[in-house]
Length: 223
Image 1 (cartoon, rainbow, N blue to C red):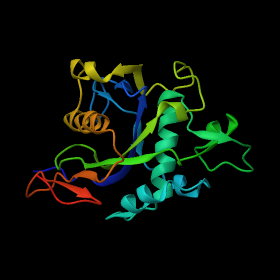
Image 2 (cartoon, rainbow, N blue to C red):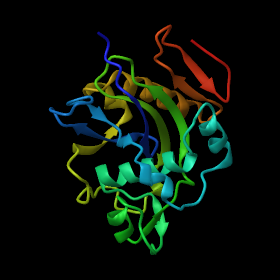
Image 3 (cartoon, rainbow, N blue to C red):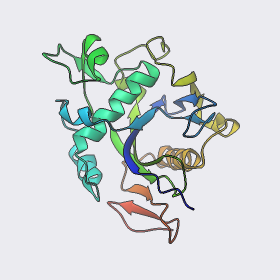
């Protein structure tokens, strides 16, 4: 019998440093989802993420992110920033003091920053295939490391969900044990860097029952 695990909204952050390396870490060997794999920081959207007040993302990305989405943009971008903080200790935000942090945001608030998604670019969307023990509708956001407010080599505030946090050179990523979808996203990233043009459309890897098609949000369909 096929596992019909509920599909959860999720957000992932691709942090690009000097256009040549990305921030990745290794999931635990006993993790229920992608055990032992090297991944970008990210995770499921929590209900309290929608309660966080912050600036909007850029309008072009916001319009694409709303395409075929039932969840508010702010909840997705807040989740992306929170997961980046929790899993790496890195902060995407602006200085400021919170009046009353939303549940789950207390430690981020204590850092003296507000989350700021204005530098995030909606880059990729993918749905976990049916049959996996956990399934996510993941939105991948791209951000340049220069926008982080923290020391890029200091991961001391990270939680223990990811180990071996490091900046992986793009040319070396294939040497790591990567999930299939991460390989696809990295290929898209390398092509994007080579084009050196603004993002014209966002790939959506649907993983439905009929065909593994990639459509493009804000563009035309492609195989």
